[in-house]
Image (tube, rainbow, N blue to C red; front, top):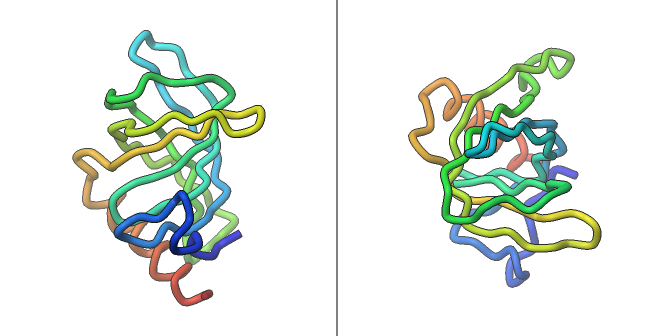
Length: 122
């Protein structure tokens, strides 16, 4: 659950992506709120699963439920913006994701703490 994706796969990126399983809520441009699942994170972006397709090439507001790396029982709501780069049908779900936009320092620090933690589990 917390290993980088395989190099050479369809998910090959410049930076390793680390698998997670976090809840999140995405707000669409029309105001509709979707429950989504964060599947992977990297220094530059995120991959999620959604029940419905979302518009590509759009900046979406997402609030991720990120566990505190020092106290996993504590989950924090972390607001981020994601520029949606892809939407792909994957079985019965849509795999969606993109790059962080204007990531706030507190969110960046928390995500970097998780990336450091997950990179040592390899």
